[in-house]
Length: 376
Ligand SMILES: NC(=O)c1ccc[n+]([C@@H]2O[C@H](COP(=O)([O-])OP(=O)(O)OC[C@H]3O[C@@H](n4cnc5c(N)ncnc54)[C@H](O)[C@@H]3O)[C@@H](O)[C@H]2O)c1
Ligand SMILES: O=P(O)(O)OC[C@H](O)CO
Image 1 (cartoon, rainbow, N blue to C red):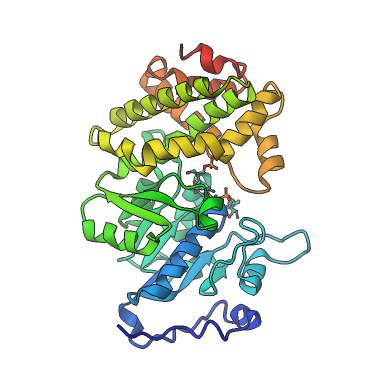
Image 2 (spheres, protein in one colour):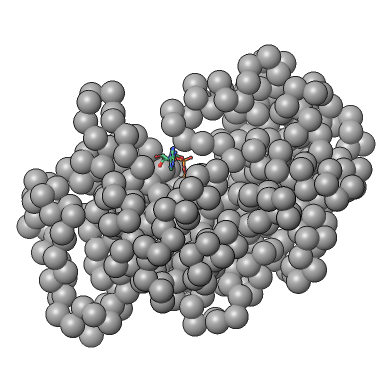
């Protein structure tokens, strides 16, 4: 089907910057097209915007433009990050060296960024989502659909709350999830990987998300198990911390494999205790076993936990995160604490020695070497 596109090749960076808050959609009959906004612009947020932006140009049912909300910051040279992204088409802080696509428009105004969106992609570190949701109440389209790429959870007085549930409940919209073995920098280089969309109810909506994300180098499949997929993505970060301790202690591959296996078993048991609907088969999707493997081999949680163990627990994770990740955020340490709260509250601590021990090491109550002692 013939379609009109934004004249993006002719556009200069200055034009793009000037157009920032008022990009005209040149598409005729644009009203039936879905507008996509990415809420978040960190390492994975930027790669997600790149993936999506290449597909919105390809498929006529989406608006070409992808708006990306940027938590504004001033760079060391005094420039604003959002302005630099719009001038260079690159997130110079969180994804340097990678062009996002000229149809990605960075927008530092959260309310403005989401106002016209039919499809909202949430991808910030999980600790910021409660505040973001509060700011978005009443600011989004009622019929908007959401997807969360966020690996993490909140713990409330009444119990654990997955981020997709937080989004659904606070904003009154449906929310799917996308998780998987997805180290962002590798996907930015267009190296092959897979991902899993978790949905409940309407398969057509899941198919729409698959269409938005799927690429020859990024194969997305959908399963009807939001909780299972999201808990896989969330809990694997705790296992990654354990794997990093093993690396820091130079205990070798067999020990690391054992930790990964025990971790996966605890992930499954914890998920099923929280939600009896969680499917065993979900753990064999990209969001399950594949994410455990990649995150325990090459993720940021693993890397910082290795450094923590090498320093004998004498440097804090906050210090190591700031020093090693230049603004990117770990999710595993806070998730370990959140999981621990749930386990303690429900009297399940002894059922989950690996999860329990990870938090006790992170909080300085046990030495890193306890990671293998307690799971034997
Ligand atoms: N990076 C990856 O390889 C990867 C892959 C898959 C999933 N994820 C998940 O995606 C989520 C987002 O990760 P990421 O890599 O895009 O982020 P990141 O780790 O790069 O975090 C930095 C982002 O946090 C923002 N930020 C800092 N302070 C903030 C505040 N007060 N309020 C709002 N935002 C603030 C920064 O502006 C920046 O955009 C996480 O849950 C992560 O686990 C990450
Ligand atoms: O770098 P990490 O440890 O946050 O992990 C990144 C992704 O979640 C891997 O799928």
